[in-house]
Length: 324
Image 1 (cartoon, rainbow, N blue to C red):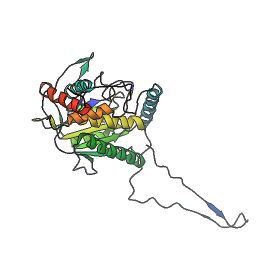
Image 2 (cartoon, rainbow, N blue to C red; image 1 turned 90 degrees about the horizontal axis):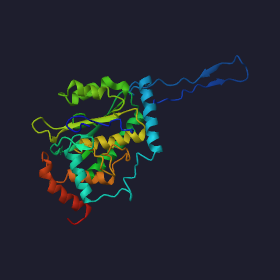
Image 3 (spheres, rainbow, N blue to C red; image 1 turned 90 degrees about the vertical axis):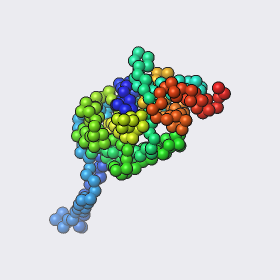
Image 4 (cartoon, rainbow, N blue to C red; image 1 turned 45 degrees about the vertical axis):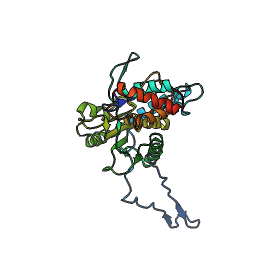
């Protein structure tokens, strides 16, 4: 699973708009009992010209994806997955688990057959992170408000966890981490927005954003300048509009956290959303601590795993309140 400075996506890991319809009321007023009496009708007012256009009905493909992701979410919930409790007594972890999981998730880019493959430098944001919700034309106004509220609440939570300035903005000019909510009918819109945000993105990577395979539930790309890719300055995530509510929130939680620098998954991390087993849908207690470590001032972007290891160990023991 390529992450952060390349492309990260939910793989086919078994886990994984409403149109606004206003009732048109017509009323005929019958004058007296004479069937020939004069009749008048209440004519609905003309729709104001300054209202945003209503979304077109979703295409057959978009409706099919919505059914698919809805059934997938229900199947996972039926099997006791996609937990939202953050972990419980049956998911214990200690400082050594925290240290080990942080190294695997923050420094390594890809897993294969249970083995670490590529070690990289620590990546994170130096400056403030300003998230902006961006919507494809297929996303209705009611859903847009829900997504904005979710994003605002999550940004506030991430700030409390990390101590790093993370906020939302409605300004395209101020935003440096765009979260695009778009469906299968919005591919042209997504292509244009991602090209605007990341002018140097390759055609192949752009195609993944604008026409993701069904197995890609959501994805993110974040990083810095070519000369200093570990100091993140720009990010963009795609959240499929066809997802039901919990899967949608799950994508928001994981993709933004990965875009902050926790770019990998680990089969050993539990409780954690950085694990392909789909047990947890939303940020867990351990995930919060991983983010605390990532933005601890004792670490810096560009550090290697070997450089950071003794510092991470100290931070992990401090957070857990355990003696070394």
